[in-house]
Image (cartoon, rainbow, N blue to C red; front, side, top):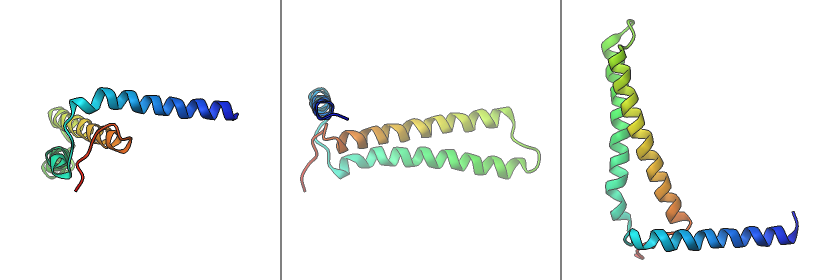
Length: 105
């Protein structure tokens, strides 16, 4: 890759950071670790509900296999879990890329 291409890529990254920070930072208050607890607990509860449902279904059906209704419930819990996990990951990325302010200890 040429030096010019590398410079352009660095400028693109800087511009992306500046734009994302300009748009996102004013909308989300300065964060502390404690501010993230409700978000992390939400994701943990969603994961637990998904896995618990799997365990409950397995203990109920034995060799018969799950019903359509049980699978639908499991799917709904998976979607909830995956969405909360993705959202937490997105928030983590915002922090890693310095799009948001974080409180100093």
